[in-house]
Image 1: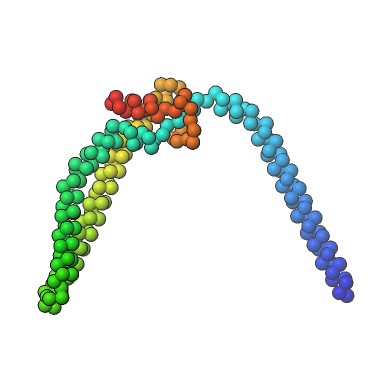
Image 2: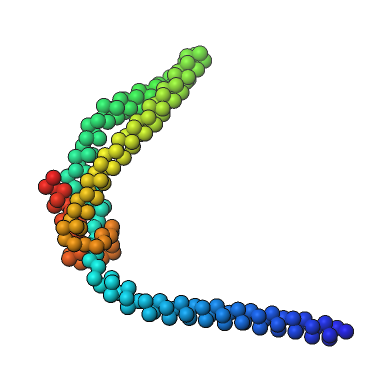
Length: 193
């Protein structure tokens, strides 16, 4: 009885393995057919790619070297310098208050100490709020300036690509020969603007 159960189980697993084997064979045939089709299409794709003129630009280099980027940084510094100076002064005032509490806290009356601690907390809260507003406003303006500059860079890249007959411009590459690297040409155009 036990032997019959083992034979039935063996036959069941044998049939399952044959089914799985047949599925694997059909999958292998499908993969083989796809590879054959891809291999046949490859020469056509390579011929088309050989006719394409591809260029490369390094936007990182452009962003760090273009005079427009430097001008944008200076504009932001001038615009936000007064607010930054005010924040720096508020930080100094808060530190003075904290030093006063640390130095004189032991000799102050409880009401004076609590009053000074409350004042320090309020100043710290106000400083954090002002600092957060400053950071948010600065980031918004920086993004505006960056957006304007990126639009200008994109226009110059497109202009150079069209003039020189490039079919595709790629941003960044591990290596690019000088014949396809348009970064210096774009920087030269941006410098002349």
